[in-house]
Image (cartoon, rainbow, N blue to C red; front, side, top):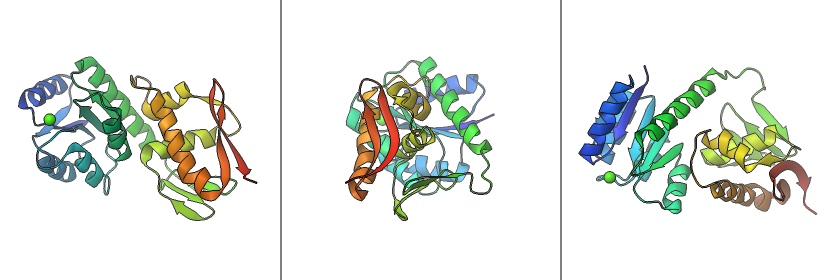
Length: 233
Ligand code: CA
């Protein structure tokens, strides 16, 4: 059974989650501050992290950032505030999803199942040959090493940016709807702001199109987005 680490300083919530998750059959670990959460995550190597953002010692954002140096464990953030900038920052630091407090336990359980399923699917994609490299124009992405190059130069993308770009490139020449991107990049039962897709498209255009004088991500009015490679005049 999958193991889950809960990092949450509110002991009542941590205890409640622990009981619920154990009831679902998960192995559960708990930590009550950011530093011990980070240590436990590194030592115990759990299958998934539930990470509160407002933590003593180290903030949840900081735990996320440090953990991502060496681990791609799925992370679901708990956020007290319904604050988009907080969520975007967490997602940029490599979190996979978030749930706003107070949350319904069923919602969190559904997110956990999605995150674990995505992880298993990813683990099963064993790279062989160059099948994992997709190159369109001067933009190439490597889905095994998670690297992106434009004109042979490496471009640093966050995980959500990478997933968004990958989906668009895999569907080159086809208009992709916001809903498709939400489902593919954030998961089917994601119940968040769909304008987050537009935020990530903006980041990608800044890092790729604007930096290299090319046009790759086109807006298709009232539909969504389309990847098509053009050198800009
Ligand atoms: Ca807290």
